[in-house]
Amino acid sequence: MLSPIAVTQWADIQSQSVAITSVESLFQNYSHMAEEKTSEISEVSFIATNRIVKIIDWWGWTDIVAVRKLKGRFQTYNLMVSQYPHSPMLCCTLDTLFPTYMEQNFVTGFHGERKYPFIVKPLRQVVTLLTDSRIIYPDMLRVKHQHVEEDRVLYPVCHLRYVKDEEAVYQILTKSGGFSANSFYLWGRESIPEDYCAVCPVNETQNCARCRK
Image (cartoon, rainbow, N blue to C red; front, side, top):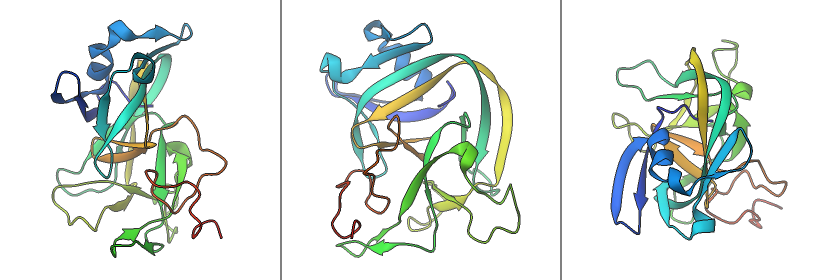
């Protein structure tokens, strides 16, 4: 789950507006549509209200299915993948789901592009150089960065620091199953389906014949 200060880009088709805001501001913008699921969970469902709001995915835009506000007590951490200046940083909980990659593995797409197999894991299970410097192939996260080439987008976590306890965190669910926040690519579903294909990007078939052989 994301800290209230996590930033993402989204677009409201009805009002023809595009904004870059915190996830807290995104939720508050539609709080009049929120439904109390439980005493701890409020949800804005764009499917139920037929409102089309899109969010940046890795490959472009995808529809937001719902935005949830979870109330309680949550420890949040700053996550960073490299030490060079202006490295992207994301504030989230250890339960936040990420597609994780191993950079040496990839398949070649129809247009010659590299498609990296990935496995979705909560941040607390991501194997990084932080846990053991002897790890040869740590889990990688996909991150866009203005100072690097487009084909260099996979990084191991090198910095994870507790920030503070939050009284509320946010969850974003999307049609494609992915979205970007603070330049990090995250999983946009509640869980990992049993028929999940780890090679195909989440905006393609989940039952690719090539991958399921």
